[in-house]
Image 1 (cartoon, one colour):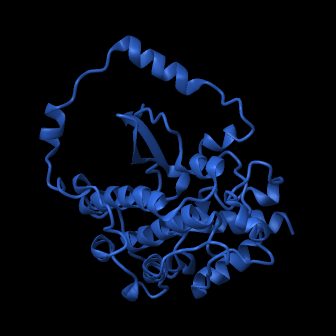
Image 2 (cartoon, rainbow, N blue to C red):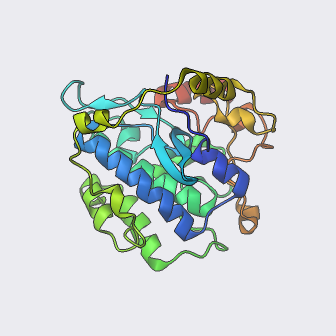
Amino acid sequence: MMEYASGGELFDRVLTNGRMQEDEARYFFQQLISGVDYCHSKGVAHRDLKLENALIDNSHNNTPRLKICDFGYSKHSLIDSAPKSAVGTPAYIAPEVLKRQGQYDGRAADVWSCGVTLYVMLCGRYPFEDKTDPKNFRKTVKRILNGEYGFPSKVALSEKCRELLAGIFQVDVAKRLTMEDIKKDEWFNVNLPSELFENDDVSASSHASKFEPMDRELLTRIVEKARETPSSGGGSFGSNNYEARKDGGDEENEENRQPPLPAAAAADNNNRMSKAMSVDEYMEMEEDFH
């Protein structure tokens, strides 16, 4: 059992409303970095950060709060072995993970995935898709390994925002921005809520002392609501990683605030870029379609 996030996935917000303006995207990015930074401070690398794994909680006076979920691929620096397997979600995977050359820094890979998440919020498409063949994963991999990306011509982004993304999308891990670098970045700090980083050392006991048991009747209503099947066409996107999700960064319609993964997009060969799996599994699936 987990907390109920009434606002659904961040993915659904982009799917419904299209790409965000900088202020809105920054608002959610600040919360994402705060959460991931906290995980890293506790020795945990997530390894599958993406829009679908960022849930929106609207219970704080209708002020959206981001919550990170799905730690199935996570690694703890003390308990687990060092990350070395190429797992995650293809469109969000860092180049050093794709290279499959042994151990890598899961924290640096998380930073890359956070950058992809920010890019999708801002641009409404994945950063490393090939413009002429966006569904070709092999071309996407090549662009990721080379750090090849651009910005849609009709999306106006500030220079500071572009510089932040450029610092995150460094193929050389040694040159890539760290969490500390991002937290000091000028663009990131605009309208930064003070509570996001001021309580880094709050103890678990202090948190536990504020916990109040939930009324059983309320809990039952929440569970029943969560079990309801969405009535809209795009409702299936809110399910788990094993459900097919549709991708397709449409360059031609970029000026119309199109979401990155339209619900009307077509079938199997177009469904896999946002599904979590190992790279080997993905390559095997690719072979089945050629």
